[in-house]
Image 1 (cartoon, rainbow, N blue to C red):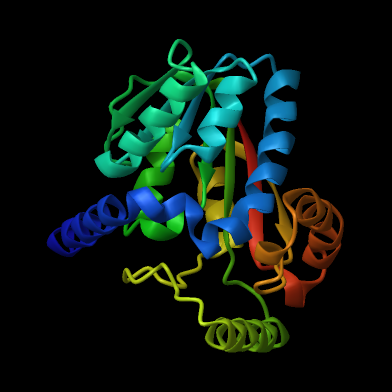
Image 2 (image 1 turned 60 degrees about the vertical axis):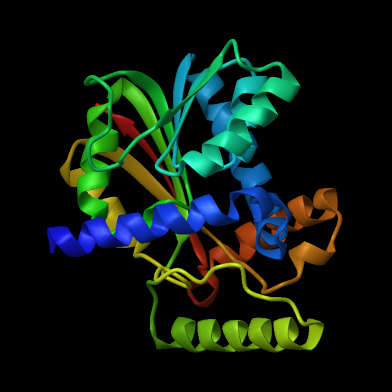
Length: 261
């Protein structure tokens, strides 16, 4: 299993190194942009309320969220196992003059290169579904959070009853048909393509290892957001996305906010 895990990670690193330069301009990233804006604003509001100073953006990639956190005045470290993605982010930070309060590090989520209780907050945005050993990574994330510190997670969700699963199949089919019709290629070709994880299982694991957590959900209509202006798409996520997430059949993403006691 360890060899399989290492192979998985190696393939993921190679894949993200190869696509780093085109990652931000992909149709998929345009579609996810309003979700990133939504969670960034919500999470930074909570970080300010808790007077957080140091933040880890775990699995930061090319740093869309990292930049927002740094611009808001937090001291942030962006960590990713893809040096190619970090190179893109490094150039972005230089351009925006954010290098004084934002630092980058290559690292493995199963063995984070930080001391215990190093951060006031950790954000994890669409990272866990790329990871073979999720439980180990969650344990590491909790380890490096200070007492009363915060953990923020958003991931594609796989839980639900038969009606939700039918809804997922319908939405995926619509998305594939639209992609074919518009001749849009799918950027993701790694083995975690389309992988989803359980919000409830993730919540229970975090509670077992010392976090007090709550979970909410967002709905995701396929393909729509990539064709809308970001302000309009954001408004839809903040309204329709939240409303749809309250319905079991539409719980496409889960959001967990946890506090270490």
